[in-house]
Image (tube, rainbow, N blue to C red; front, side, top):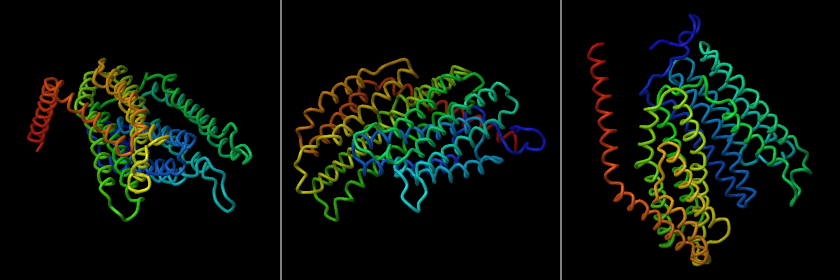
Length: 434
């Protein structure tokens, strides 16, 4: 495989080819986002209200955009060759510092401390600037892509300036209750600019050399989000205290079963079929599908999983205490528990529609049913509300296992045959190049 670049820097970048898989370094890179998601969820849990949830979603949106930008770079050049490991290690350090600032990213600094909002804004700029710089140099033989990257740079600078302006707002504009939150407004505008830029710039000049790499990266980050849900269930159980009760065990088991049902809903059929469609497309059509179905439509799924995890954490805390275990789960915790599940399924339904041009009536029915069950769940004890939600998830899983048994076997057989053929080609190549 020929390296990208002139004689002086030929060793620095190695392009990807179709069929390239995710590298171990990319898995290591994602670990810093495990901590970022965890810190974001913990800060939202401590500031458990609608304002705190909005701030958490804004932080998640910017973190997600940073992650997506490095996925695009990793789908253009190998991240484990040349200078790219150094680039990823540097980005990891900056993202880790930004993650440390997440709990105070909307607060005013205390005397003798750094401004957490300003630290986050600077780190965000450094992460984005590093990505754009490396991508620009790697695209030295693609003038159109370089031009597109320069067009992206301006909105990124504007978004960063908005984050800096939010960090520098005077205290009286931030800490006053029942007033317009200027800091949240500036963050929201920064998020809108970043996400709208992709549509404004378009996908001319960009390419997705490896469909398998793209699909696998997003599948792995979705798994990380499910891991956050499991951690939240465990956190809620741990904070109850040293006592273990049967209701607490029941709630923990139900939480895991519900998470497994949603994991199955993502990975069982649609994710495999979407990857096959992505493999069959080329050029702008592949880039457009990757942008819409993966960059954009995976964000509500990730947000839904984290919202569900926050609701489950609050439920575990209430269920583990004798004084509150029989009380109804109401308020924000109930809406996060059910609303997070609905948001995940709705995001996945839109992902299916964009990638496969189909809609599963089972998913539509489940979403409508869950929305209708929220008032009933609000009058049930927390454990009962979780049991009802888990029962709907299990019903969805079992129904799709029965109804879509034929398409599942055909799809899995095709995927298996493709893997066997790919392994045979690799074996033949190794035999010829010994």
